[in-house]
Amino acid sequence: MDPGVFAEQYWARRPLLTRAQNTGNSFTDLLDLPAVDELLSRRGLRTPFLRIAKDGAVVEPKRFTTSGGAGAEIGDQVSSEAVLRLFADGSTVVLQGLHRLWPPLIEFADQLAADLGHPTQVNAYITPPSSRGFSPHYDVHDVFVLQVAGEKHWTIHEPVLRDPLRTQPWADRAAEVAAAAEREPVIDAVLRPGDVLYLPRGYLHSARALGEVSVHLTIGVHSVTRWGAAESALDLVRSLAAEDPQLRGSLPLGVDLTDPDSIRDDVATVIAGLQEWLGRVDPAEVADRLRAGTWAQVRPEPVAPLAQAAAAAALGAETVLRLRRRLRCTLRDGADGKVVLLAGRRSHSFPADVRPALTALLDVGELKVADLPGLESADRITLARRLVTEGVATVPDAGPA
Image (tube, rainbow, N blue to C red; front, side, top):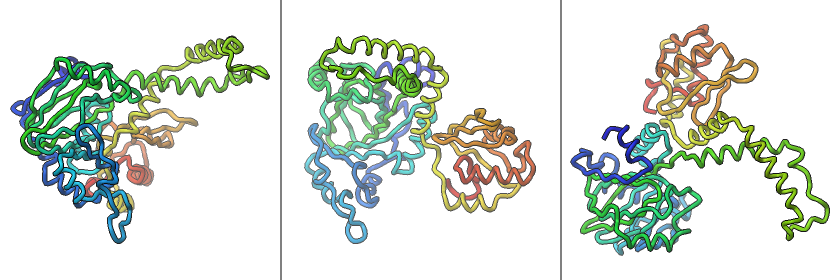
């Protein structure tokens, strides 16, 4: 599907089921059953990277965690034999945060977040035959479900609350959710390897594995919302209004807070003052706060600290400098005539004379140190070394990033 069609007709609007013959992929390059066994048995997983559930109830972590033995006595490490017992008894295993653990999914999730403009996470759900891990519920983020192995029967219902926020979990509306799950579903289908299901946040869903072990990946998309902009605006008002002497004033001595009428005038003054401060808020500053919060959640490509440190120390004019992939960057004017590079969750201040060099690198993405414009040879090396050690750029020839 053309991304523009998806954005206009489905994104944050309605579910979409796409069959394997249209995806052309089984997704085993991202995760397969041997990979699940490796994660559970050899990667030293700890909670909360593993969660286990059965028939809608979450299993206490102490039932599947233990010490790792000599030299690794940390007590919340996953016990592979305990997981075996629970899985054989019909429990669903949930591998959480795989976008931080499993190399193929690290790359996949980070690139998807860059493409969508919204942060992502990845969980895997491994369900025994003819079992269900969770009862009908909704998520507070959009999801893409990628069926990797086996078959799973999905039932999707209309939301009881559209576009729920992170502060509005389904458990707060458990009775409504249970009632809505008895109605006619909007999707009632079996997913097989290669099938993909997209669900906007709020849509009710439940799933049951059929005759064999089922594995699916859930790609959670943490949507940047208008409410996020509202929170940024309110945070800004809180900072600005603290400078208002009238709002900082004390209530009368002996005030009776059990009598609302006794402080009605003071409250009215506060509300009027906040409204005035809200009117002074600069939309551009709100947008910048929203950007900063979002960029802090989206990871650029990892770097190899040892290799890049060695490369930074050995930089020369012919060294190729590459902007770190998926690192979101922009230049701003700073104080005292300096230039500020906003890069992911960090900001870097530079002398004004490096602006042409930074602009060129951001525009092209990859340059030899000698080709950084506007600087003398020694200053180019100094700038390049700082960009590498600060994790803004990498030296591709130094080894895998």
